[in-house]
Image (cartoon, rainbow, N blue to C red; front, side):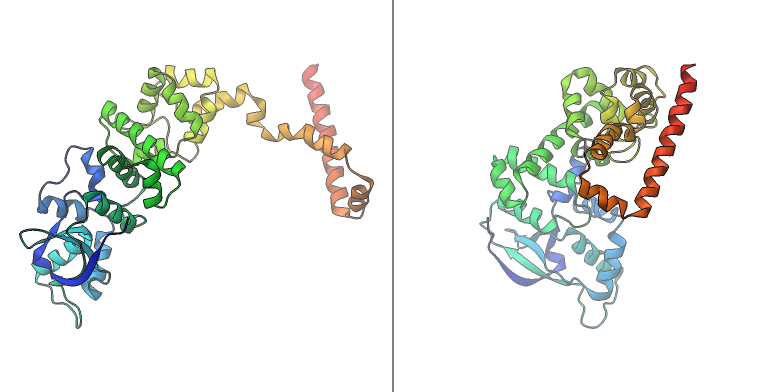
Length: 333
């Protein structure tokens, strides 16, 4: 889906920031999406990386051309490059003097053909912005949803245009729908919680969708609005991977439901108590290890015999087993 364009240089005063820029999709959920140029600037300058960009542009100017669409009134709508444009605007308002060879009042631009469709421009912006600052999985998922539901674009075509697998596209679309449902039910629009859907193990998502009660509990347990979340993160200890083990244990899950203070780490203690192999996973390897030892060939045994350190390790293992068996016998008395 190629978009025709021509390169040029445009006065900064003729540029308009794009209210519908994909970077701002996360603010739509809050109901406070920017509607004016000043509100867009305020949103952009809130980016923690903005100051670093400002220092760079103040020193060397804008190095990479922005992308714009010509408007009927002679202005240009910034399709990609809102942050760079905002930097230039601020420098001009401050009356900053550019270093030699640098201009603040004009900027290199790729001028998109006026006949390009809105969908084509959105896909172009996605390609240009993916991987850049403030452009992560949530923004990509929101764009996929927009292309699919608003523009009726097939998932297969989205996959091709965004250079992502069809599996990734479907995953992000599903995660986006689940996150929107969560935001609607709880009022929490913080896109950091998107990871609880996009990075959740398949087992967890299936459990969430299995019943209204499960979904309600999950929404409550990942939401820190009214205190510490019970599921603390998507990946670390006490997070989704541990929670995937909790949902298989009725006692552990019951603890989280019945005790308002119990979190995933507390529930995991119940899981470990109920399943010795989860508490001591090495026990599950004893029988396979024993079978491997019994199945050694004469050639393998000869190789082990030539390795003194291995023989020492085997003797240590034998001693440890004998000591453990002796101690276990005392529990039977």
